[in-house]
Length: 401
Image (tube, rainbow, N blue to C red; front, top):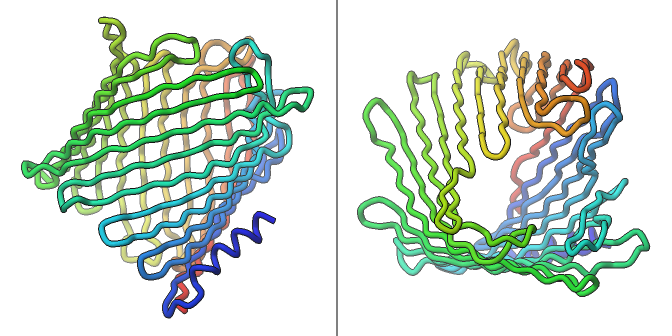
């Protein structure tokens, strides 16, 4: 039934219009390893557009499994998104709806107020966003979201769990270059079944600036935000105010060689105490070559490090080397360290994934690829297994009628 409703929504705006464009895409991934076979995910969508309006439909299906050796978060679900964007002069109106259905084994969640556990079934989330320009320098925006979550206890009782969020703000592009923004958000959660009600609010003060004309071809973007919070967290403690600073530096060293870095620091202000919430950094180096061929070749090396109450790090290498026409050789490697709760595995888990693959691109309309990878990780002992991943991407192009 939901697909009939969505198709009807797609066809209604097109009736009576002289010129309408239709775009569509398909992205499928599948694979498995020596532990379990997983169908992977599918992303299919379409976009219908006319003069001053766009209707976007997107369907995503994802499946993740769990095994005795590598416990994984169960994530088999379907997500349907419908977005309708209407532009009327300086004002943009965007009604939307998202429908999520949990499939297979239902994920368990712990309820507040010591109310036990419940099983997540999915949710429906309608929303409405508005934005407009007072002039070329002042922009206004507002949105409202509502979640009707489907949570059931073991006795199959519906918890009647609902959440709502209202947000809005304004941004000013100053004559001196920086952009200054003030915004606010209010979130409310309630469940009559367990007599639970909670809310929190936040006011953000943001300043952002960027320069693309710096010496040596350096591009810089910086942003700072101070957030004033109201309300309590899930431990019933007052939420601390937060200061976030982020800077991005990018430079094209030579025409085919670029460097991109991002640094972020977050500090909490709690009753006169200042503490570091998180420090993170990311660097990416990209080298492009064989640019005159049908498919350009490139090598990308990136690294990430984040330190908060936990520490995570990742180093990744990916490359595509064109062999002939649309055929290319792929090579990837990833080294990652994260905390783990697997018994007898120690506080941290290191993972190394590497392997080769092949890819074939048919212009900009289709791409098919496959990779064979080996993963090594330290759990109770060092475990080693092989994995196969493959994907198909289709983009037929734009149809005008």
